[in-house]
Image 1: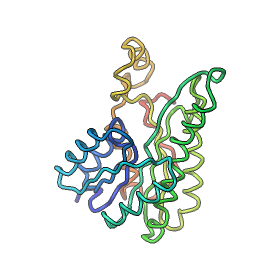
Image 2: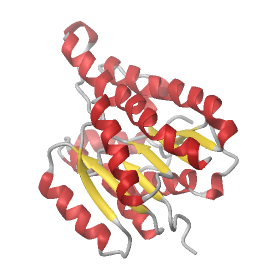
Image 3: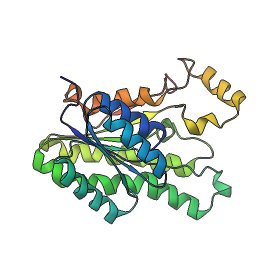
Length: 248
């Protein structure tokens, strides 16, 4: 039997990058996938088609996880169309990097809203269903930056550190109902976004990582499979650094 067979996963921000990688790997392991996207309609349609071709049920929803009401509606729609919500992966996120002295209030607020408030919104939206089912796995995407901080990313680091505190608290609140809450903290993951960076800079970063390479979306997806499946039935409240040894 496939590890995630019969389970339904909601993955936010999945039209590209890490979210897309997680969706594709989850489908391989038999999960039904409901994913959200904000503006990339063509990429979302393509992903939906690709997922459905693997013999599972998949559907993309244009929904903003940073909006409380839209999150409630999304959870209701997924429950209606898929019949259960077993896994939530809060992956939607943005960066608006700048040194603190140059950072505007709007750039701080926007990153907190999209990266952190979305986690509250979506967790709250699926909580009732998971409580009724007496099971569920919530996986929140933080970052090595949320664990150790980074110059020029006070807003991003604050949002990603906040996710860790939030997730530990949810683990304590919902553990008695067999609902688990864990965090993945990716390191330098190579996606379409990082492909636009300066080659020399990327080579420097790779050489500073003990495994001497950047990670792939599949590396993150495989860690998500572990935390979403019954293999991790006794794991909750934890932060798993998937970073090639960066924080070692």
